[in-house]
Length: 94
Image (cartoon, one colour):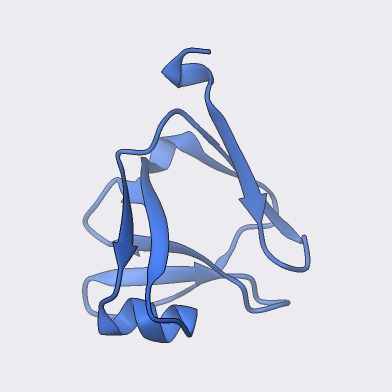
């Protein structure tokens, strides 16, 4: 399977928001910054970064919360699952 054919799928806990990502991530990180710890309610959050053009939401899309002057976080408005992180000046999404 080539990189462009690699598919990752997931979604929120209640299943109303589903996503499909094609290709391999730019990077994968375990982040332990204060904001990620608060958003995840955990000691760290593991996330992968993809070009925004490779991320496709099926049916519903996450709502967003402006978590800082530089970034927003996406979440499911029905079950509260944290789904995305996006720097406002970037063409990538985590």
